[in-house]
Image (cartoon, rainbow, N blue to C red; front, side, top):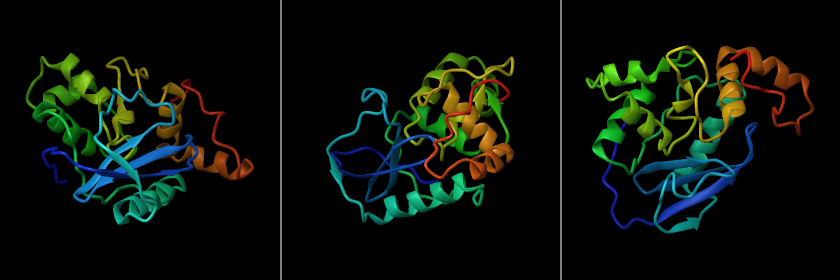
Length: 190
């Protein structure tokens, strides 16, 4: 995973349909910069100038890998990142990216992993500002009691992603009509 410092960058974007709603994919020439939710708060991931580019190679590859992920064909993403954040945030995001497919960690686990065991709240704040949702799997971070906690995409989406990774959601999605967005997923049972 490679990170770069943010400069006055123009970002390219495209949108894609997914089982969790429309996603806005954002990239620079250096790599993937963000995956934003349909109703994402623009202050959560502030970005410079955005220009639509449906043929940007990083965005096309991101869409392909996300489609494979949702279809149950991909367990590990292979994309270059262009994170814009503080060094602490980037450290947390690299720790998130290291969480294996189908596993979860607590905020305390991440704090200990980065060598700052008392920084649990700061880890939570950095987790909430993760710009590359799904691929940098902040959805895999849960409360120390095992319960689902805040998620920019919503708790139902977090539960859906965790179920997808457990393999249970793929069968249910195949049985629903192709236009369905997995609205049946809920926080219970994740």
